[in-house]
Image 1 (cartoon, rainbow, N blue to C red):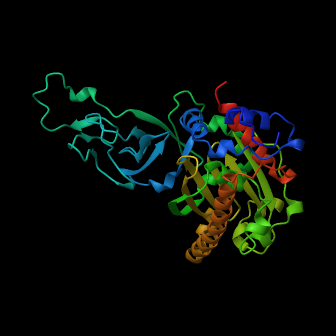
Image 2: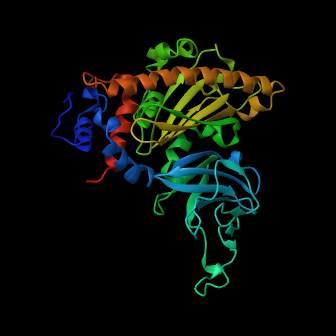
Length: 378
């Protein structure tokens, strides 16, 4: 089935789409990108249930450092408590339900901007002005609800689901695959946020396939890859991946000359890891960058964008210039990707468009579609 069938719901269209063998696979139906109803299903059954990434743990180095995010419409605070542990808390006051903190920063306590109810960094209530005459009020009973947070290989992982298996368990195969690169030791150099006018899945799929690199990225990294040397193996239940053997045209892609740990192809393989649902990591022996995606309705996506260098490149005396060179390159790559994915979404909304057959280089896209279908209600 290639054309939209108005008798089917977007979910039914998606299930029909993924029911065929990969060798006959087509791109996902347009309705799963453009339907507000399908976007609501994703919020409920994927983003409110799965592990999401709030960035790198080193973004919160000191007690009181915090950042904020939303998960399925739920405002969340991620902070470093006084003992140095990562904590997740509801970002809503237990009094009249104002949101508490915005953006990023450092606090000694969490003070509500509405009535100055004040919480300790563990979420317990420290003080509440003018509440002594309310006989039913007990300060010790008031706490910000906790949210699960774990440090997984240097990544801050967050979920609203109390029953979700830990990332270390669910993503054990990631460690088996790329553990030799020691992601936890990489040094973040930048962290930014922006909005793009596309569906979150379009951007995720763009990352998952390198089929577009020679054309979309002709002005930047397109020349570092050979389509016939790309490998797209079968993925896993919790992530898909592919890898590229890089040539010598971009030294930062390769292991540092002083590195004696990595051998042979390990020194030049670039891994592209798509951790479901929305953490996308490019990991090379020299640097990493990532995108963490949050849907904003069908046609917009909030993007957390960060990256940095492997520890030995970061320790190089020329580290500052390496960081600058990497960031300039990635900014150019991002500009190219923005144009590509926004054009795709405009095409998805066109009446005459329809999904086409997938290349063997787009196996991860098909597996992503299978993942999304598997998380939806029966």
